[in-house]
Image (tube, rainbow, N blue to C red; front, side):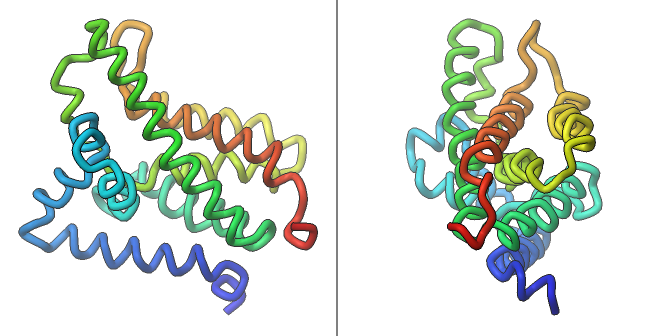
Length: 203
């Protein structure tokens, strides 16, 4: 099958995510596992590597929820797959990890500052925050290079707009997950202009 042959890393990742989704759906230990894997401030201070890596395996909610339709199927299944097929698995993995890890850590800084300033409530430091959405958002942004010029501006508006559409606001600051998605998008756009400018055959 051409899809699998051209993007084996992405396809393997999707299989892992779907298997993990089944486990998190049926396991009585799922809530405990998700609480441990969450990349909140408390967990990042206690076990940063475990939460950063493990949280990228969680797809929270129904597979047909609008958020997962965008992040899992469009972000991973299409955008990340295109990056692997046209720019190589190494650069696809770089985009995902830069978005997932980079946005998580930068959002943690924003979260810490906002809590200390009183903008976010103190319980935000232990809020559950898991999933592939930051990495997927970076892939959506990075896939701008796949589009014709006329389609890029609408795509940028979509990539930035969908997280903002459901944001909760604390004054002028959106909730920290929206901040994370916007940071991940910025990382993806930066990688589109640098790492992904040249096709796979020249890497």
